[in-house]
Length: 457
Image 1 (tube, rainbow, N blue to C red):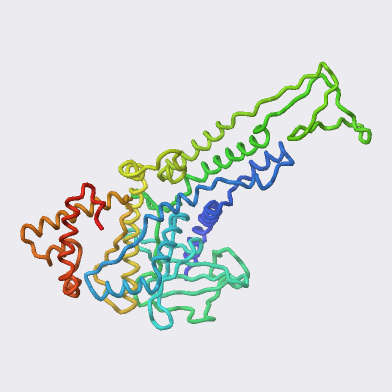
Image 2 (image 1 turned 90 degrees about the horizontal axis):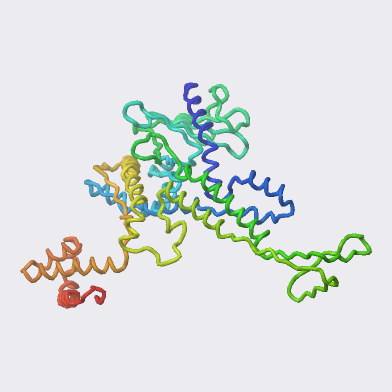
């Protein structure tokens, strides 16, 4: 293991580790508002500390809304054996949940990683890796990963370092307690406590895969929260301003002029005047006047907050109705599609780039399992929103088309295939289909006669 491998890995960790921690803090609502709090405490030393901890955290909505549109439906392959194996592996390994976590991490941190290897039985296994623990290096020409380093601390304070190469995996541990990847190999020793220090890799590829969150024109990863964090800080400060305004100016302030205050004989200080429900105020001076300062108009604070929320929606391309529910009718139909078009564009861009990574992962899984992967294609669930009315109208259109095909003499088998049934499903259900053909014809006639298609039962 050459020293330069440690140096580039050390440079990566020192550059990105604090960013991963920052975005993780903001996602979980631990925002850096210390300077604002310090200023408020100077002005109002007795202010409620719990109130100052309140934040209007929009960061999870930014990440989760994006991630919700990235759901894998299935994998297709020109090798039926590979397609069947992938479907079973995906279900058995609960990859729906794993893939969701990977997409969420990539959007939150800018990077997500998995390692793919085999267990003690020789079966392929996909392990998600902490984004802050992995660094990868690419080939300058082909954009393939040619080396990866994983570094993490053990419970006893030592640093474990694993280097992944196309032909081997090298395992190291620090000689002394440390949390920083060293520059020199002399500070590490080979690790073989639970296996070989050098593990042969016969697959001629680095078994680390990366999901990089970037747009089409960038090779650098970027968290979805990077442009959001500064505006989130401004939003939090505006919320604190509102809370302080509520405490100081939400209720009218009364004042008394021209009357001497009662003096407390014990303290020698004026007695405080208490005004509230059920209280009685006695004023002996005829020249005394009572006045009132009206509550401040706090609506401007809300307008400022809405403006910051709109800026967050713009820079993140998140539909505004996810961040700030409309006061009137919720957008539907065409207006919703227009509002979600920028987000859908981002989702489809990630489906293209991240689909390639998933295809590489599942191809390697097949290779470990001893199955020829063939040409694998990742299929995503359509993220486009659809209303119940639109789905009913689409179903009515399909049913009318099926009725027209039947009336012009198309066979039932061909008609059912065009409605989505496979040849195998038709053959396996001939008896049931024979009984239901007349019922289907009746339903098609009812749908054709229905003005909106919603009376289909």
